Length: 228
Ligand SMILES: [Fe+2]
Image (tube, rainbow, N blue to C red):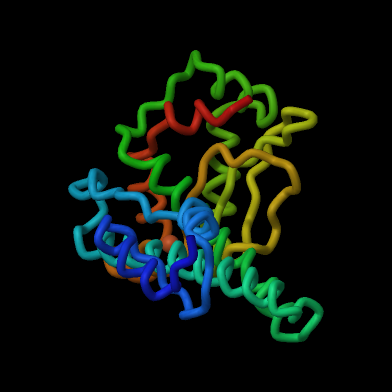
């Protein structure tokens, strides 16, 4: 069965799905596959009301995150179409390929960040993560000093507590923007957004105050569940 992309958009919109695609022909099976592959923005409205985070700041942040999801889908579709059209190897294709990692990481890092928030900041000092932190940093206090030190580095990006999947070792890393500085094959355990949009509405230039609020709201169980 062949349907036009325009018809498919109408059909999927009726079912609550929106897919923006050009009006060339594709089979229903292809269209279904594209829909399955598309990422959907998650709902983090349960975070509204967190101490130290205004509703305005959080709502702006959710909107920004939704933009990364939309752009990741858009880039994936555009690149797939360019490949079909024999445009791989062109400068345009190369630049969009470079851009893909930036948008994808912008989406995924926000998901890790929102998902390790909404807790009460209570760290289980006898837990698996506490033991691992003590093993690799000497103590929780030393780890926190290092993590906050990374979080207050000048620049725009993220602070990530990573676990090396091969050695199991933990590292606090600075990620430039969304894509610079990731450790290959490592698992993110705790993510802190230190782009200015994450705090300036509430804290101006006082980033350490924002980081203190972040610590009060960490969902340590969510972080610990990521540990191998
Ligand atoms: Fe952000």
